[in-house]
Image (cartoon, rainbow over the protein chains, first blue to last red):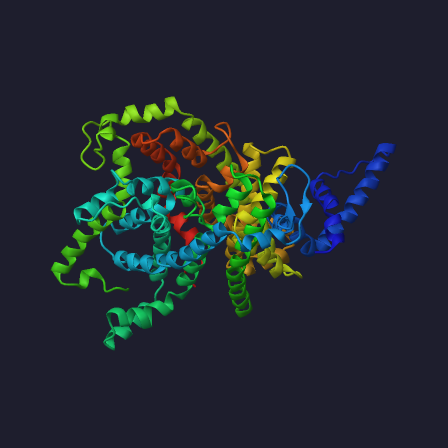
Length: 339
Length: 282
């Protein structure tokens, strides 16, 4: 975007505003003279607009949204990277410490726990995709009332993760929770899932899989709607059915849905903050922390206001996410070229 | 149609399917059903551990009145609306314009700007947290509704731009060219030609953003504190601390918090799903 374009914006708005209000009068006074001069100026601006509007209009339309986005999203990304090289409590002076925040991270047990949990999240969250496909296949029928079933199955995604977290902490409650009632039914000893270092992350991920599966389901249901029925008929005539039909005929056609499902699931896994915060607050003894939560804890919670250290954790998280963002943009770029 | 249409199956399979459907649904929604039922239970049921049996009495009025009278939940809900509605209007409005600019005009850097919006929309929130909080404090709007709403508008503009741009790109470009030949100005083209065609996209985005923002928890924790400004998600978290093991109240609160997006979803279901599944079919 060039500077000259944005500079002329102010004048443009004015000239548009007075567009229809220019009048002509016979009696000439001083005021009229000025007004006439004004209208010439307006006229030249109007001409300028008319000639250049295809070049100017995009600037005009982009400006407000782009400005907000740059100020609140793009610039802060770089600021965060910058802050990660400082020691800062958020109020006082920033002290430049070079890469020592990152050096500290390398020796931080809690950081490794969070990183490990993030990887577990990434891997297990992917189960939402086949699970969503399974539910979608189950519901992809044309019987009476199926639409209501579809929307009710989608329900968990509509409600807040805070509510999902509360519902599941209750589900896991060691003395009254349904989970332990079921275990007892099979004769197993109760497990306090959310108080057990070994189980807690898996327990939270299962809670997260509930809405995520619903999301993937709806993506696949939409995808299944668009599957080419002639191809299926042809394949059926060739005696393909069941899993073979699914794998060779249906899944290739569902590729766009699978792609979107992967993107939203990966992002969801890396953003996992709400459930951890609601269900365990990172506990017990920090064993259910993920990077997003650990960062928040370092920067804002009772553990102190270590903005620089928190920012360094966020940069690591961004670096992981960048792999996926780059892959996504690359695919979009190829698609754009294809058009 | 895949799998094989059930009406072509043998009658027993059909019956089996019709029985399996409601059972699967109940299992799927079991945690939620339990919460709904618990929100009607009495204190006595909770104390005696009757969580899964039939309630000894139904206390709907009592429990729901209790949470509204004894806690600021009404204020939390009101705050949620005060954040959500301006965000929907702001983000959808801004992205109508950015989407139009990026879809209709060919200029240098168009694709780069578009990718900037897309990439920014996918970054982890945490990378923005410290600077955005700092910026909000320096504007003097930390712990205000506008501080929270302004950030949401800016951030959601990324996703909305992606959505709007692709939507407008799919419209017939001849319409715009015909208007240009007629000498219609670009601004009028946007207002009179393109905007009316964008109604489905606007509806879809509005319900989506409403749900996203209503359910936002992270930014509510970062940019607000206290019952005067906190939306219901952050409010539930602090109420949960107060209501230790008063599960009937926690449940009632959860149901109240979940209601508005659920109603929104059922009213605008078609638009909601159209928005969410954008790109799921080619």
